[in-house]
Image (cartoon, rainbow, N blue to C red):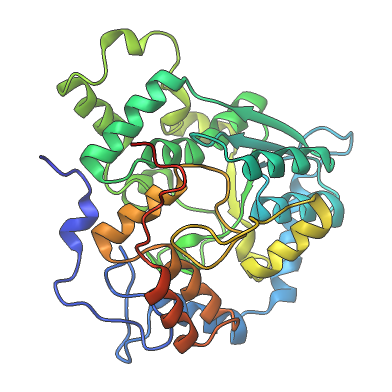
Length: 354
């Protein structure tokens, strides 16, 4: 079977583990220095020692002053699920900085009970929200294509997660969009945008987020294999998966920013903040494949996304969680390695239907 995931072609033949955390060089786009320290750990040191966060907050205030409405109209779009991170960003923008956010949600494939409860708690804590469910029949077909040809059932969700905010920005003429963290630098990946306060370039999405498979390429494969039919193209079923028109983005003055560029990003602290301010709840027990219970709770298919990462790259959900908690000082490397050994690669059987 043809494999479309371009990341696999670039995977190093010899595996090296970071000397500070538990991530390996099998993580796509991550780099290591001469001391076998990964780019994410080096950035964590930069966050601690080389960034003036008071100066960054002044930059944030200048940006928000440029966009803040005087009449209460929406002035910033905040994409998110109502999970700990998007809740932190939206609440800070509204209550600390006096913005008027329109929050938007690209729906999970299949909501978990706790995920939907957190979504409701979030909007009911004081936020207007647009929740978009894509056409279920087409969404399932795209998910099948992602699983069979890219090794990631999550791919259509990722398309929409990136593109939907821009489409809403254009339709409502709200230029400013605030995402949470720049995952490429926070967790290990391409560092080209480490000091870029303008967000990432739309032209880079396929490489950085879509595994080298842009939406049109996946659709072409679906037509070739007969999984997608001509009748699937009626109406605007594919609109919000696609990258926005670059000329329209320019005309609208759309600006995408990462909150982590302006506020020191610590996921565990975001969790406590969301619990206190937006009614966020963690799982009663740990999530499958890891030891943690407060991240990526929304979707019943989440576990399969991480499980496929484990199969392809040897990096599962516990590795992802432990690595950033080591960088944040919440775990030692030895503790993280023990957790990875115990939980990484656990099959997500809770929602698996035979």
